[in-house]
Image 1 (cartoon, helix red, strand yellow):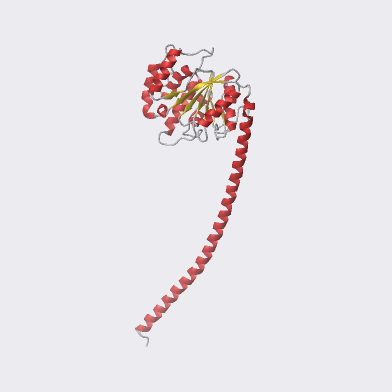
Image 2 (spheres, rainbow, N blue to C red; image 1 turned 180 degrees about the horizontal axis):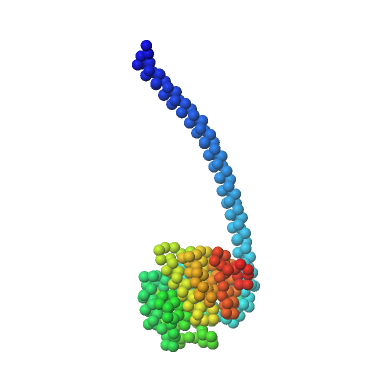
Length: 311
């Protein structure tokens, strides 16, 4: 007769065997799994190293290309803007190195830089839009017709266009006293910072930064885009130039390029952070004098790398 104790011992032995089998089996599986993961990790490491090597090689080529463009830039633009005058307008996020390099190329092209005006963060602040709009109306010089658009970028572009750009007869659009008073008003309100000896010019370059971020990035970009577009309608030509990311949906160039009316008059260059892009800025000003506009650079919404080049 089989006792209860025999049953218990038998059942215990079965479970003990199963446990030992599970442990031994999992140990073998774990070994194979770990071996496979180690092989995968080694393969991924080799792939990452290869990609890093390719990236370093590409960066070296870009550095060489930028150095070459820097060296030939003065030759490429020589005589393009002889006896022309150009004013620089910069946003708060524009890179000083880009501004200085563009100014140097402008002088190499034969142009004279008549000064610089910086638009402050307050200029593009949506919370100060009403203040800017009201101030522009109060500072309007006699005889200057402001645009009918209600947005602050367009209104400010109309006012500053009259202050910064010459008319078609190369004459100032406002008297010295009116210009001084208007600039002083905008400066004291914290919207602009004029440079020393600022004078009106025939052409303008508006320099902005790269990709924008934050909740109001799109609104800020729209102010710069509409300002530059209206500025272009006030003189012989304007180029809006930005760095990497400036042509995306929340960048000033991206806003312009999404508006066919704006792109029909205003030229945009999206790679001003490179020596080649800065050359394109100067060549684009020359094209503006001929009544043409384009979307140039390396972004996906550019039509060509430079004027006259196939996309």
